[in-house]
Length: 482
Image (cartoon, rainbow, N blue to C red; front, top):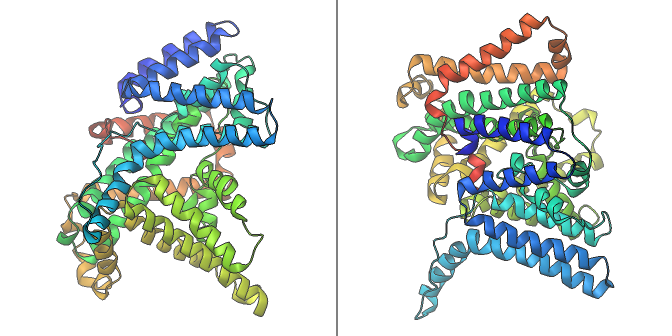
């Protein structure tokens, strides 16, 4: 994988040099060609699909601004349908075909819908949603239609965030392609720091914890409840460090070239409610579903039952977006249920009790939220619903909390004593850094430290990547599958 290998260490500096020495409009062409090459490394044939969608959306938006409302709506439908059709064929056709054939066995149908078994293009869900955001914003007259095809194509194909986001809004990214970008040492240092932190989170923390999660979720019946609980917590930090690590790398890469991406994670495990968690986790996707699904359905401007229905629809669709499997749908449904219950409990407290009387200490709220989120992660990671239900039952059973099982958790995995100390230390280090940034202004204090101290920290992170992460340099990012 390009973002996981030494290939990127050659690719990016070459693109950076060509970009900054190119004059005017050639900068856009350089980035566009680099982005096409970047995606072609994964599968060159799927690049043609992207070009088809780019042309359809570009044309639909241009025509949309010249015609009256009925035709505008038809063009929007054409654009959205084209994107969703491609996404549906590659990602959901076999899913619905399977359930249709399953139902057919009970209805006595004499035929089965054939399976296509298509390989899902990497990042298809991400650039589909980014393209749909563009045509929706043009339709609502929030932005003008982009007249330069090369600029719009770059908006969809821009390589730092092409395969796993953040899902950028056109208002933020499109105008940036028109401003002249010049090399900046400050941006270089800032971008490299963020990329280094992202690689550290991915290679050192996420890939180490993946060993625990893969062992337990691969054969859950071989582990007791305590071990499964530890593996689930390991997965919670694995997926966070994996995906936020990618976002850091993408944002840092773009920053070096002079572009500013939106922040995609904001210390989500410090949330005091599931609703707050979703305002901090994968912010670009959460805000997309909020603006283009939840609010059009009515949002909070309805009865409590209707609001709960809107939440459930939004979260169920979010689950389906993540994958064509019922485990993702259950994961989304659980999140919607928890957010809906939080809203109901909040309304009840506001109506009948003073807020201060029912205010839980922050650390308890954070702990309860973390537990609820980990319950949802079980189904996100489980290989099947049956496996997920089994694991949840084992984790919530009494044996999970017995001293005997807790003492033998370590022996259930292939981790050495050093691996355990290292994994626990890495997670604690991550939380310490995030707490210091969040509450102690650590980022500003760090930048004010002597150069020797700061560079010692950089070298420590680099050395740890090579010492503890070299065996996982080709480990794919989790969200590449979406």
